[in-house]
Length: 276
Ligand SMILES: [Zn+2]
Image (cartoon, rainbow, N blue to C red):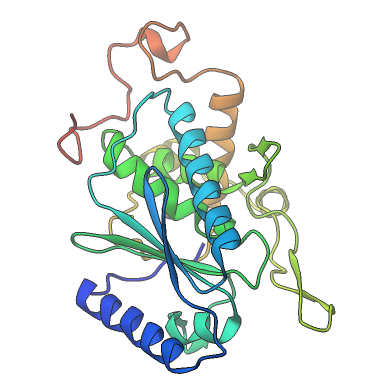
């Protein structure tokens, strides 16, 4: 996950226009395509096949998130456009810096007033996984009442473990597990990420008390998050993993579980956005 601060839509459009104009000026460059799936728009220079794959992966992730919330319909009042770039050069021209350095992940999320954007580097495999955490936050914001920090981050981290392909969906693993690799043009493998998994991280720390975890303030409204390698993220993920996998949490009142019998969730507060 590579969060980015809000960028005015006008700037994004200018950036997009600039890329398109540069590309159009070079006859050898592939054309830019705009593709539409049921819920998303993909703009890409990587060809129709890649563009459609990106759209499919986001539709799949959206469907999985809906099933996590036990919702047949998810609301997306602000359109999401995915800019899928075929190579590093174009991606890093647009990517934000972190402490003066280029980001090390192949995707970032850009919230906007009337449109949200995701930018992907398709040179890296499964680049959509880099934005799964922020994608979860976006869908949560539009479809679930405001909750305490551990709940939002626990669910976003849980969702961040998602892997989707044409045959199956996997979710529930360690979202920060191990190093991931990519191949460069010479087919040399290079490591993208070397940080510890959350499981490893938890193994070497004195944990926060549950009372502290459940009451910790955490504002994600700006999508400006730093590292996920903190006790807060790791323990939030662990608790959410437990309640989802042990079916301690249900989101449909007709289902039965320990927490479903309460009239409201103990952590819920008034809705963050008007809900249909
Ligand atoms: Zn988050």
